[in-house]
Image (cartoon, rainbow, N blue to C red; front, side, top):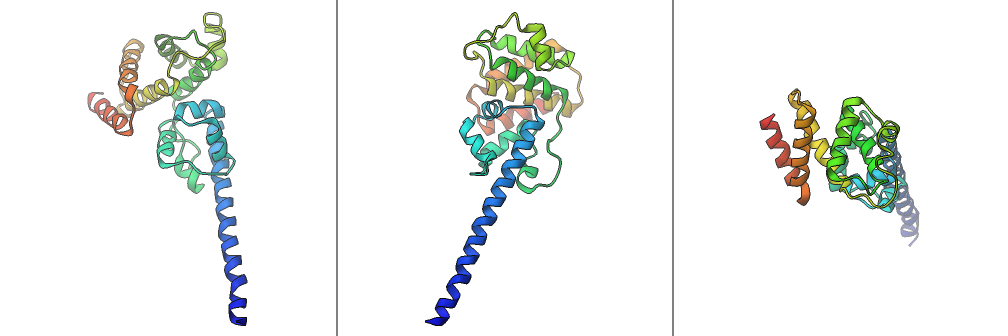
Length: 213
């Protein structure tokens, strides 16, 4: 009886330590995710939109209440977040972030405020931001009057960002130079293909681009 009584506190303490360790780990993962999001220059709303998550869900991840699933981690990796660092604490905050990544994010923030931007306009804005190295403020100065703030965006922001990211990564990987018009046309084609987006579709498109470029 006494022996059993003596063992109980030890088991209880061990369980509490495990729970506490998991809470600390979740909070650390959340803090590193927030660090990566800020390094990309994105708000919680912008990142949630790009990866297809709900804002409260993302806030829960960053607050250490839960951790992203493998599917969402994969989507984060595709936009440059080093998910290995998010989970382990090792390595750089971001994967290779090129000018197109910054251009894409600036356009996402610009477009999400407006209902007047069409899909074609959004692709042109990305090209302008990339070619002229415009950030969100630069886009506001150049195109703000043409596209006043208001309403919900007509563009599928997450799909457009994914199309741009996929195309530009393969262009960069292949070391090819492509004219702005040709790049925009390729992005438009991939955007249309991604209407029914799955991880398999993304991988297939990336493979085709790798072979073609």
